[in-house]
Length: 79
Image (cartoon, rainbow, N blue to C red):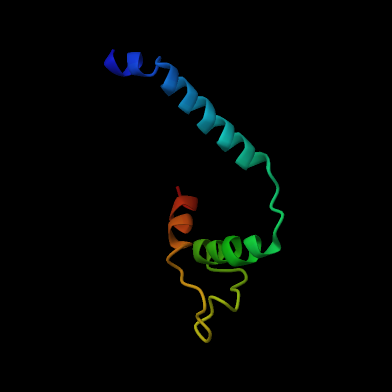
C-alpha cells in the first residue's frame, strides 16, 4: 500500500514517463557509428558465442582496449 501510494506522486509519474521515453528512443534509434558496432557489439558477440570478429584493439597482441567495459554487456546479453 505504501509503495502504490509513492508511485502515484507526480515525481514518480514523471520519472516513469522519462525512463520509458528514454528506453523507447534508445530502441528506435539506429546505430549511426560503425565504430560502435565493431568496438562494442562484435566483441560482445565474440564473448557471448565464442565466434565472430575480434577487433585488433582487443587482440592480445595489441591490447589497446580492455574487456572490463564489455564484460557486463556480455553478461546482460545472456539474461
